[in-house]
Length: 62
Image 1 (cartoon, rainbow, N blue to C red):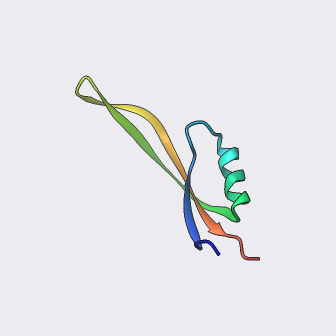
Image 2: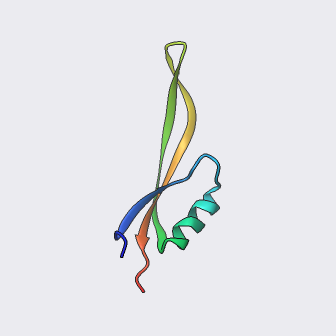
């Protein structure tokens, strides 16, 4: 039995749909979403790199 809730991060090489499908295969459904910007340092300045998307997965009760 897995955890009741688990955060799934959309990997750089997958789409949102692929991430949701991966969650479903592991027995979870999306019940929340959060996004946070990812920065890296370029010439001493923080520069926007990409948006990190995470879905809150809740275990699907059998």
